Image 1 (tube, rainbow, N blue to C red):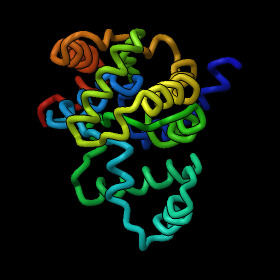
Image 2 (cartoon, rainbow, N blue to C red):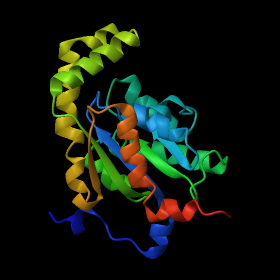
Image 3 (cartoon, helix red, strand yellow):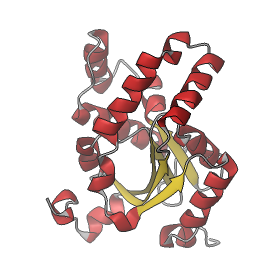
Image 4 (spheres, rainbow, N blue to C red):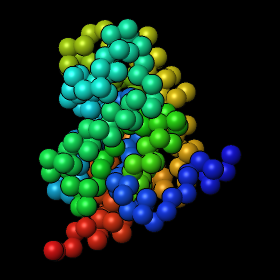
Length: 219
C-alpha cells in the first residue's frame, strides 16, 4: 500500500482545522511518558496522554457510558470509540482555554496505539513530526519497566511475564505505526541516552518546525 493511500488527502480547510501535533513513539520503558510530561511543562506545548483522557472521562455522557460498557466487561475499547473519547476531551480542553490549538503544539503520548487509530486520528490532528525513542536492547527496557513498577508499588507489573507481554504487544500492534507515516517525518532517537539529551534532540527538531516558528512570533 502506498503512502498516498495510507495518508488521506485533505483540503486546505480540513488541514487548517486539524490540530498540529508531534508524536512520541516507543516501547514500554523507552521514556516517552517522561519526555511527554517534561514537554508539557513548557509554554506552547500541550501534553496529551491517552491514560489522562480515560481518567478524566465523565461517565455520565453518552460516550462515557459506552466506555463503561466495554471496561466493565474487561473488554478493549474499540479504536473508533477511543478516538471519539480523545477528541471529546481535546474539544473540552479547547473550549475551556486550557488547550489553545492556534498556538499550542499537541504532544501525543500513548495514542495512537495502532495503525487504525493513526488513520482515525489523522482526521483531527496534523502530525508534524514523529519521534521514535529506539531501544533495541530489550533487557534494558525490561530493567526500566521493573524498576518503575517497583517504585510505583505495582509488584504484579514487575513480573517477567507481564513485561514480556507488554513489549510483545508493542512490537505487534504499536510499532507498525512507523510504517504509516512518511519516513521523512520520523526522527529516531537513542532512548538509552540520558533523558536530558533525548529532550534536547526533540526540542531542536520541534523548534525548527514552521508551525512552531510561526506560533512563537510576538503578537
